[in-house]
Image (cartoon, rainbow, N blue to C red; front, side):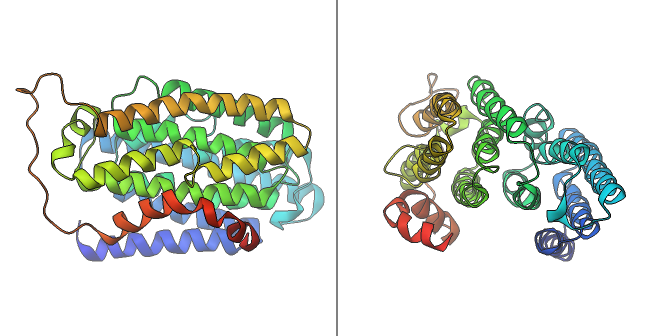
Length: 346
């Protein structure tokens, strides 16, 4: 793909995201979502591999259906209330349809089936965009409409997402699929809190984006697409592998790393709102995610491949590390001590 085309698609993604995030009219928000979808499709299918074409087709069909539901929900609300403002969503049917549409956009259970397959058919950099930037507009819409949505529906989806995201990630051997199920699990944490504290859901999304970007960029640097490849990368970039171990533990939410902050605050807020049972369930379900993060970390840093003749060691990489690959993992590890400042800003 030539640089001009990449620039056009990057600008379109920026435009679509900005348009949705800054609009207060449903038609403008829908337009931003459509621009985003059309801009990412060529990036998914640029390798011309059958799996990439299949991923692009699945992504287009799901996102088109979700966008149609967003439009239908807003039109139904406008028909009954005369309001096109995003924050004025009040009709019960519109609220339910919008919840389904945003769950499809984000990949929340039970509308999650497309996400692991699409991520598996994409490159690591496009996978990073799908897991972070492409989820920003739907999360913004969820934030703006959160007072109108039913907490019980969101809580059910959230607990199912945390359960299935953790459970289905256990037996995966492809790093992109593991990160897809990790994303589904993290979205469960955002969905459970958005009705009670929308700002906390946004903070969770920002920190999730930071940690996921660190993992994706680290894996892209060492070109690790499978666990068997990950076992041999310690010879290529030993220091990056050691940092990857800690970043994965941060993504799992272990103290004293950055990933512990959103989980701690969400459990605290749920307890204050007297839904301690939901807090207990989702905290226990995060142990499933911890298992496959530990598995990734174990493969990356602690094991050798069982058949050394079949797995060639990789050459030591003496090239300078990308600045983002250095900065993001550092932030993924060390933001917990400055959590009072973060909370004051948010």
